Length: 101
Image 1 (tube, rainbow, N blue to C red):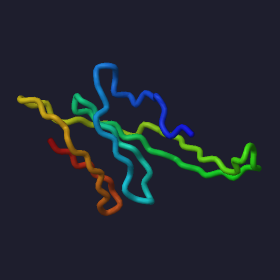
Image 2: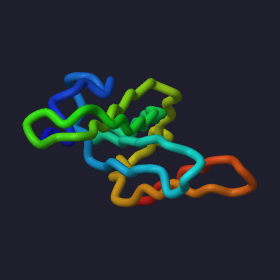
Image 3: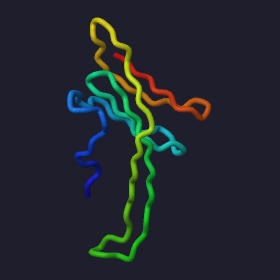
Image 4: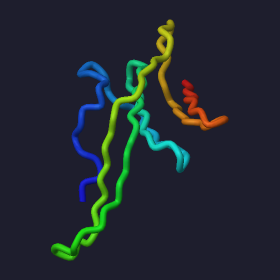
């Protein structure tokens, strides 16, 4: 079973993904990633469980589709900020992202 493969999240070749968080609620399905340059990318997820006739002992499948939703970044500063914490927060049906160094 492959849970996550080598996919391009869009951060670019000059950055390393350092944080990844999933949505904390049942209503919003997303993954947010942050990189070593202080850039964030949000991908919405659509997850569908399908039941099939059993083949080789497997009777159901999980299909996941990801779509790019938004991006944002930390402000440029001196000295350079190093992201150590990322927290998605739902408030009044809106998603907010708290980040800290």
